[in-house]
Image 1 (cartoon, rainbow, N blue to C red):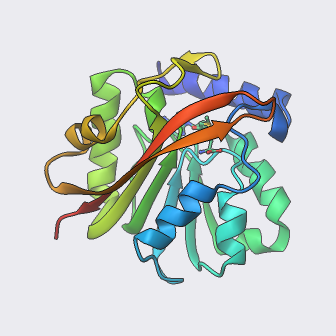
Image 2 (image 1 turned 90 degrees about the vertical axis):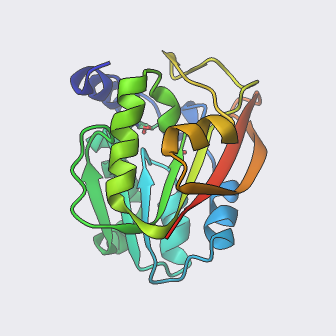
Length: 207
Ligand SMILES: C[S@@+](CC[C@H](N)C(=O)[O-])C[C@H]1O[C@@H](n2cnc3c(N)ncnc32)[C@H](O)[C@@H]1O
């Protein structure tokens, strides 16, 4: 899928559906918050949320006092919704409308978080392009946290095919310098009461 097609898909989603009309909505992104704490992120750590959409993760991190937050998504409408929701505090957040497979990072981060964006990359070229950005943007000793549909999770999300993952497939994609420090399953309840099986894997990049 080209950047233009992806962007059109996601702009359409975020301009036609309300926050609780999408399967991935979470009032409180508990696994992500637990894992950001687990990796020992400090309030000064640089944290980027890749494919953040209109997620409430940024709201929680801002209110917990994290000071160096970046939110990246293909959809400007999703970013606008999150910005409007958090109001005045949005000016403390860096907002990037970009495709994670073509973006040119201009700085480094301590924590790279992704819930349900990497799994849309089903081809090896797109996955490699994403991983090249991860290698450029994550400092050595930093952590990557990726939530994706588990191997027994759904085959599609938002009408698009996904690549399901476990810690091994993510580790292979990221490279040998990424050391697995935690992997866990998460049963996500959708707003309409279905269950989606996710896995979250966390790696530390070797120094
Ligand atoms: C299923 S939603 C998950 C949103 C958010 N992470 C959450 O947990 O609520 C997937 C998000 O990934 C974004 N996305 C998909 N492909 C992307 C890409 N190549 N680069 C940046 N964002 C992407 C979409 O715009 C969408 O907001």
